[in-house]
Image 1 (cartoon, one colour):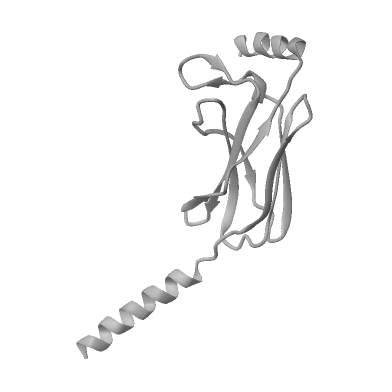
Image 2 (cartoon, rainbow, N blue to C red; image 1 turned 30 degrees about the vertical axis):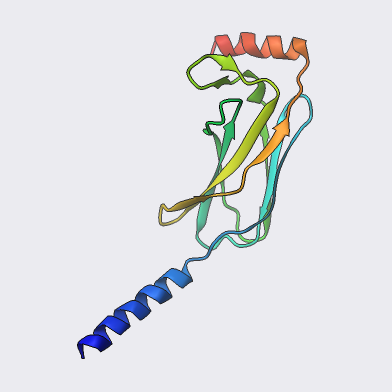
Length: 141
């Protein structure tokens, strides 16, 4: 009888771990227009997903929160325009990330668990005038 209880418990644990649905992304990409960066993705299934958190890393390769996008349901396409990438600081050393950014998604589930997507990188070339104006605006925030 004791062995049956242990087997039942193991079976219940196996069933509960296979019920959790993993979100798979059809694609995840970032592209620069010279003015801003557009991050795009499409998820196949989102049964347990409540939101996506976009994270960006600059030259220091430390990911920082950028924005949160609520989940819309399975097989939906998403797009987020990051128009502040060129003026953001990397870490505590005060340097400004200039040309290359790496993005990833933090996928947040209803039960507060989360997972991360693969990362994607983008080269971002901004004109000197736009970069200077962006740095001036950033100083007054």
